Image (cartoon, rainbow, N blue to C red; front, side, top):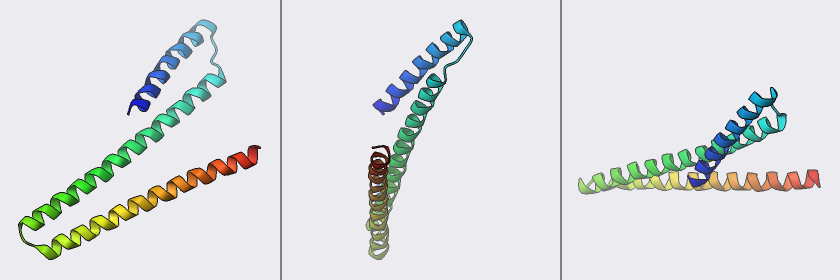
Length: 116
């Protein structure tokens, strides 16, 4: 969250500076706009990661509440089924994270190879 806040603060400060410079000189620099776009993309990616983590956490919370409710009602088979589903969800999330990290590493290696 702090990195997102820092990027937001940085972007808003730079945007104010760009606006002042545009008002003074009457022109906008392409590098400034590209830098701002890159920062906005970073903010968007960080926000996606935060939201994804929150959704997964909420899903786990709902599954745990369901399991506890079923256990209190002595419905063991349904509790076991929900627990099995929770395990599958956990494994799917871990697999997706592993694939994502692998793709990022592969992209980095390819960029190093292409631009070296």
